[in-house]
Image (tube, rainbow over all chains, first blue to last red; front, side, top):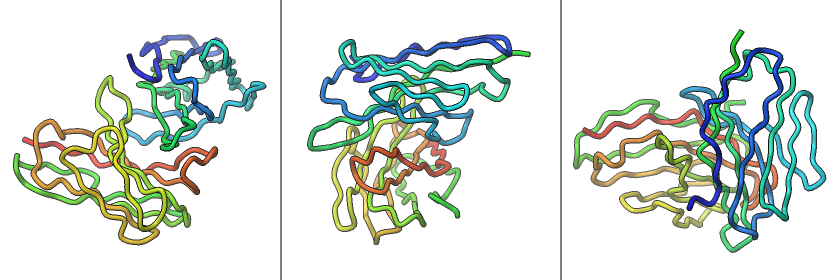
Length: 111
Length: 114
């Protein structure tokens, strides 16, 4: 089983739609959580950190549920430019502190 | 600011050839990382350097070596390339190992081993 699991998608939604992605992680020692965005054939870029109380950045809302070990990303009023792969990332609290990446969820926003 | 710069951007190697992937960052970051990305596998950590003068193995280190040349530069070497090493390689850096601020990635090196 992968340490960070995501539905690969693709999620195909019309412009203006609201779409949500979930991600589950298996290691309860995970401490920090992030969403990265990766455009086709480009490098991953940090979209937002995920805080315990949940946080919002414009049209994007991230939630963390430590008890169930899942993270979510909600995108409201989808734009064509939101089309990308969204990577769920966790940072373990152990001797390594390495970022562990999910395989990503692909989003396609159509006109 | 250039951020994280990787060279080359593309490379084709024959099985058994060697090469070094270069990475440099200009953000005065302490920690640097090498990942590979394969379809359906996500990014997997090859090696990392938590600070200048230290290197450690990641999830998939076999077939690779690294050198933290100075604070700015972290290179990845393939001594004898194999087709299984065909992948996209990303270098990343962060202020501190275990940072809550995430990583900054370079634009990647697309490597094909034939």
